[in-house]
Amino acid sequence: MRKRIKVLIAGAGLGGLTAALALLKRGCDVQVFEQAPELREVGAGLQLSANGLRPLYQLGLEEALRALASEPSGKEIRLWNTGQTWKLFDLGATSVAQYGYPYLMFHRPDLHKVLADAVRALRPEAITLGAQCTGFEQDEEGVTLKLADGRLARGDLLIGADGVHSQIRGQLLAADQPTFSGCLAWRGVIPMDRLPQRLQRPVGTNWVGPGAHVIHYPLHGGALMNFVGIVERGDWQVESWTQKGTHEECHADFKGWHDDVHELISNVDVPYKWALMAREPLQQWSFGRVTLLGDSCHPTLPFLAQGAAMAIEDGYILARCIEKYESDPALALKQFEVARIERTTKIVQRSTENGKRFHNPALASADGAAAYVEREWAEPKVRERYDWLFRYNVDEVPV
Image (cartoon, rainbow, N blue to C red; front, side, top):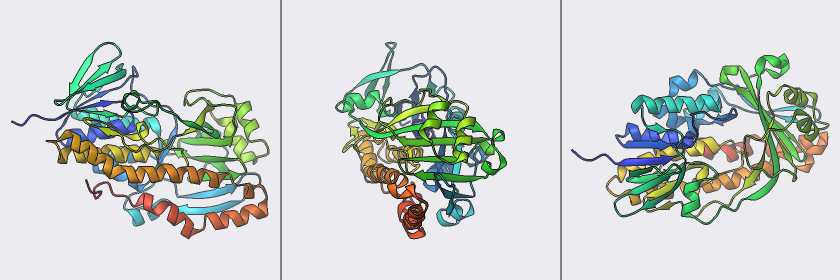
């Protein structure tokens, strides 16, 4: 009997778990090492367009995801001070008709649990918790992963899916050198029943203004509202999702904004703040029997709502490459990089461009804003910005 290829994965985030599930379904031996003592994700929202849902549906998760998702009827733009509203595009049936899959909003812990449960259903012992990865050694026969407590794990391949502060990337490449984007992000989750009826609509809303913008959309079957507020501010440069701020500070950052924005802020359970750091796209992330995926190799600013989708696409396509080139692990990882680097680089660059679009000085006045929104969010321009993203098919990408 042919020996199954053994894949070690550092990190049990969305990308690492997608890779694990896709590899297990292809008959690989998989072990995921997660530094956290329990498997849980931060309580934030995320958006998955058709390109991110396709691989998850192909992995058999449609029913479980549908039970926990929120499906918005559309997206809209609102002006920061007057609340004037422009319809952006439909997301429900239109997404299915055009791209074959819906556009869904998730509470990150819900999506994380669906993936973890699916991995454990195939191999109950596949995820090792309390296992901080500190480094590795590779040779012609395989890779040895080193853990903080002195344990070692041996496999044929190592995937660094350990996030923006990746230990695996730190050994492969020079020290990470992010630059501050000039923006601070506020995030929080709101129980929907706290909000007035006018704010409980099932739409994704982008408030735009000079120097700041706000995004909110429903989560967890409509039981929660996700809130993200991004403001140009240079006095906070801590890149962490778990730093608590105050409601008062958040209100101050959006002084003069519409009452609806302040209603949202007032009802956020805990307002967290983090500095948005920019990084240049990597030119290479596969080295021999070791590769990176997701935020470990192409972290992006959150202005195209594609961070989670990129990690999921990575995990699925990486599994395809490992299956196809099982006899040559280094080639499998190099082909994965070749298959993904152009798209992920483009997303990182386009996301930065899109952030500037939300904060244009023309948005300061009602007249200037109307002309700007009608120009920048006209249907042809919206299609140009998003169509290539949503049409991406992980099963047809050449590997």
